[in-house]
Amino acid sequence: PATLAASPEAADSPAGQSSRGSSAREGGDRKTPSWLPAGLIEQIPAIQMRIDPTTNFKLRKVIPLVWAKLEIGADFNSQISLWQFRTSCEDNLIHGKVTINGRQLQVTKTWSVNMGDNEMLSARLRLKAGCDLFTGRSYLRFGFRTEEAPDLQANFLNGFPFESTFNVDGRGSQDGHLFLELKYRVKPPRPSLEFKSESVAGQKRLDLGMGDIIFSVDEINLLCNL
Image 1 (cartoon, rainbow, N blue to C red):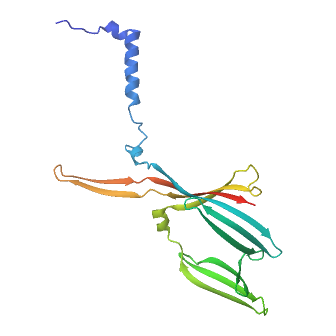
Image 2 (image 1 turned 90 degrees about the vertical axis):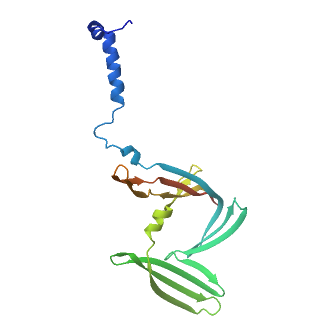
């Protein structure tokens, strides 16, 4: 049978050098860089997007008073087609909540203070002042109670909540009338540790993996300031 053998002259020819150079480049592209640890790409967590928000249309009207700020609003939930009306009043001195309870005009304000070096323990200070609109009798109460700070483990399991507001009418950030309100959560990856033992080969292996980063959008609201 006939055989073909490459002669030294063919190997030294430009065509032969070009073929060998192309093969060398193709082999080099498949090599992993020496500075990159093996399996690092597989350990990088992926990003999952979950977009299933509730949408609301919010109307707000702020009425400035001499000693307080009155806000009147209404929220329309598009999923259940329901209107909810809201009113709130805040004083200009300590920025407390102003309410009318029966014949009394009340102002309440709450502060949260950390207790020393213990980050998991905090104190809630509450100030309450009231005045009877008919008799003019007034009172002032001040108290506090200790409570545990919000658990960070719940945020790691359910995600850290964030809220962003964007102006969509082309005006300044504070002077605009139409805003887009976005509420979302970012859930960090959860590590997983797995121990494998193969009885046939007698090998034991410890695998460390990472979960995915989950980005979920909870609410998309359109806010209109009248």
